[in-house]
Each structure stands twice: as C-alpha cells, then as structure tokens.
Image (cartoon, rainbow, N blue to C red; front, side, top):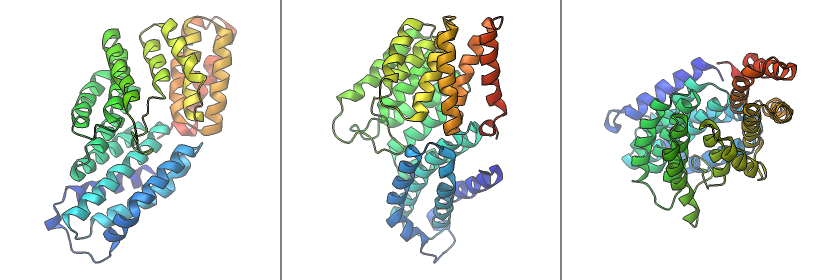
Length: 332
C-alpha cells in the first residue's frame, strides 16, 4: 500500500468527481458503461472478501485495481445518470479502501479516502452512503481522541442520514458512534441517550443493511456499551457489557478488540492475573490477523498498566504491548 500511489489516485479521482460532465474530455473507452453494469456486483464481492479475510491488508491489491478502473471510467464523456452511478461506486469502494487503511493504523490515508467517499456519495445523491462515509471519518478522529473534532462531523452525518432510507440502519449507527464520542467527552447522560437511540435499530425489519459500507445491525451494541462505560470510568457496567459481547460469535478482529477492552478493565481494577490472560489472548489475535485496529485498542491497556509498573508482571505486559509500536502494521 504505497502512500504516493494512494495520494495520486485520490487526486485524480477527486478532480474527475468535481469536474462537471459537460467539461469532461471525450473518451471512447467504454469503461464507464462496463463499470456501471458490473461494478455493483464486484464492489459487493470485495466487501465480502474484506469482511471474511483475517488479514484486511491482503484485500488492497484488488481494491486498488478496481479504483483505477473507476477513475478511468469517470474520465469518460457520459450521461448524468451514468455519472451518478459511477460516483456511487466510487463512494462505496473508497469507504472500503479507507477501512483497509484504518485497520493498518494509517489514519491519515483513511481520512483522505473517507473524504473522497463523502464527496462522491454527495454527487451520487446517496444520502445513506454519504452519512456512512462521514461516520467513518469521525472514527478516525475518535481513535485519535479528538472528540471535539469528531462531534460536529457526526452531527452532520446524523442530519444527512435523516434524509436517507428510514428502513436502513444508518441513523442508528451514527448514534452508536456518537455515544463513544460523548463517552470520550465524559458526558454519561448524553452517552446513555445515544446508546438508547442506537438500540432502536432492533425495531427495524427486513433488509436493514447491505453488508458493505453499511453493516450495522445492533449486534455490536454490547461491546460498544462496554467501550463507552470503560471510557466513562464505570467498570461495573463495562464488564457486564463486554462479557456479554465476548459470549457472542465475533470476527477475529472484533474478538481481539473486546479482549483488549477486558484487559484494560482488569488493569484498571489492578487484577494482573486477568489482565495477563486477556492481554495474551488479544496479542495472539494481533499476530494472527496483523490488525492495527486491535493493536490500537491495546494501547488503552498499556496506559492503565503504567501505575502498576512496580510489579514485574505489569512491566512485562507493558513491554509486550509497547513492541507493537515497531511492528510493520503500525507504520505509514
């Protein structure tokens, strides 16, 4: 995932999205027509591969190839309807590219991808996709602990989601992420309200997500509650939620994140036996998946181990987690 290549493709695609159709150079490649026909199915396939893959970075070459084709298709002289369809494909796939970079801890590149995804989705008139791109962008700020930056992004995403399909889970996913931001800001009441709003997703019926850029179905709310309550300094509520989450069938990436949260909670309680158990289980999943997402979660454990460093067990765990900083997955 070469950064120069990523930025170059982003610049080209962004320029073509912004260029009005009447000002496009005439191209007879036929790329736009073929993409409009086959693109939705291929994008859907790439999302499925991403979700099922233990190593998210392994999916990038296929995604990069398709992004190049989409950029070429945008250069075709085409109808407004065809251009909207291509913009929707771009908005879709750049969210996937952003997810891959996010998992590799390459937050700046992920943010660039989400910004372009939001612009393309806006051009396509795809409100739910647009709201999801903004929500993913807010995640970058959330994981960098810039909660005051994430809050207005999510407020905009919430307003856009209200213009989307009320049968989809978009607005409830936005609420779930807003809960984490409120927790980061230390507002317990606002966190509870946002989590309660997110719980309303369980009142939906039918196809409430598409398995790609929108995958929220409420099944993650237990672990999200745990994350929020841990941030708010409520270990009693956090343990209850995280234990419930761990009993569910989780992907390796999600399981690693929950284990990291439980390790952090145990360290907060100065229970080094449990901290060691959960930390080693999470580190095994980092080795297995190469996931920067789990690695980033482990930093919360390290910070909570700092007051316990007089104990050799805490010092050893701290060193093992610190070693993740020099691992290839954490580099840009």
